[in-house]
Each structure stands twice: as C-alpha cells, then as structure tokens.
Length: 379
Image: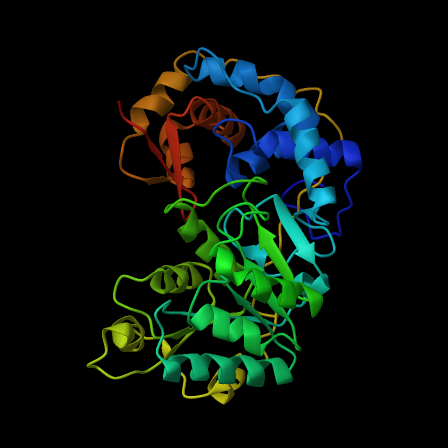
C-alpha cells in the first residue's frame, strides 16, 4: 500500500521488522525520510541497498548503515525486557499518533494494550509542582479515567507523576525520552512498575539503551501530545517543557486546556499565558469532557499508511536530467521552503525532486521542518 492509500491494519513479518529497524537506525534517517524511502523503494530491505548510492550522490563519501547484527541484538534486548517493537499501522500503535506529521515508524512498547485506546488525554505540568497542583492533576486524571480516557504523560516528577498515579486503575501511558530500558528519573521505578502491573504501558521512539539528552525531551513531548486528543497543562513555568507539549499539540490540531493559577506564582505563568493566547480554561475534567464531546476521532485526518507491496523495479536512483540537481540546490537555502513551492519553482516532477532531497538528507545537507518544509544546511 502506498502512503496515499487508505488506512489498513499492518502486520510485519519478522524479516520486515528487522529491515524497518535497520532503516530507521541508519544514518540521517528520521520518520519523514523513512516514509519517502519506503514509498520510493517499495520495501525497507530494498531501501537499505540503495542508501550508499543515494548518499554518495548527495555529496557524502561514506555512509553508515545500521549493521544487521545491531538490529538483531536490539530486537533480542526487547524480548528479554518483555517489550516489543510496534510498527506504524499495527493494531496496538497509538491511533492518534498515526495522524501527526511524520509519526515514528517504530515504537518500543512495554505493557498492555492501553496504547490502542482512542480516548487518550495528556496531563503535563511543573516538576516542582505545588501540593495544590498535584491534587488538581490527580483529580483531572481520575475524572477523565472514569469516563474511559487513558492518561498520557512523561513520567516526570510533579504533575506527571501525580497524573500517572491517579490513573493507574483506568489506564495510563508513560512516554520516555530515552530508551525504554533507561528510566528517567530513576526514582520512579516503583511508579513505572505500578503502571505496568495495572495494565498500563510505556513507549519510546528512541533506541534501546539510549540515555536521554536535553534535546530528546522535546521529541518525547511531541509523542505525548501526538497520542492524545487533548493536552491539559497544570502549573507550567514560562519556559517549561510543558509549553513545548502545548506547542506540538497546536501543530497537531489537538485541543489545549490550561488550568489557571495565581499570577504571583511563576509556576503558573506558562499556563496562564496559554489561556491568554487562546487555550481553553479548564477548572475541572468536566470542561475537558464537554470540549471533546463528539470529537473522539471524527475530526482527525485520514491516516496515510505504510506497507510494503514489493520492491520497485524502477527504484534504482537514476540521475536527474542535466542541470536539475543544480537547479534544486540553487533554489534551496537556509530559510525553510514548502516542498510544493520548490516543485513548482524548478518545474520538475515530484519524483525527481523527492530523489534529490533524499540524496541531500542522507548526506546530512537537508533539514526538514513542520508543514512539509525543507531547508539546506549551509557550511
């Protein structure tokens, strides 16, 4: 099935899962590039064969493929950890995450089937939360859970932990910034064990064993909002990660709710600012439930699935017509440009432009932005 065809439940063979894992773990490949390569080549295995040639044409002398043995060891590590790798489109892949811009093709998952619950709401907020903030988070989580909602959060201290704990019996999802076997913060080992014992789950898009860095937490926040229909923000400071989650929620067309706090408390500055900027003021879970009434999936765009029909006989990278690569390179710059605008400007077919962009990205010379925009990495 091509990415433009309707949604259909996917089920990878083990050989396909291994190839998908090698592809997403190879150099300079993110979710968007993965999709383009799969559509271009027809299979992950065929895409792996093409990567060195594509990257050379983009200007890179050598290219690092993920070794097959590394991928085998990562799959075995998942099994030993009682976890699994779930592919985009498979039954227990979070249903709303499929609809975001460039969803992860593979997720590490440990725990129950709560990931498949279409009624999911995120609750996020300050790590140094007040007692009042923690009580509010617990109240929102319990009341939303009583109405069938699972609660997603980041397993952080403060608001996240309070929300997870209150949702144990109704379902909660912990989203990791690092590998699924790298708990952060480490003192939440008992909370994680309780989540899993109650039928909840933990997910991550990062490699097994990956230790989270600062820039990995925004990626985690993108998943927290992506799995959810709505994001509830409680006690967020002005420059907090919770505001990153709200920004991603806005980009993903999710509802944003903010609980107001004292203007004298810096922990409420971010949440109050969200309300000022148009987020819905939430006094209780009832405000969230009323706002989401009738919206549990019908407003979401059609998922463009991924599958492997067969390797494409015409997928070998052919040289663009004379001057076309140079024309595309000249059109690109450090300022993000919409892909459709680029195609119109260079007067080339979309397939030719796509192949040149793949070459540049695999060579580390192209950056992707939200809204199908791209820019050239200078220097």
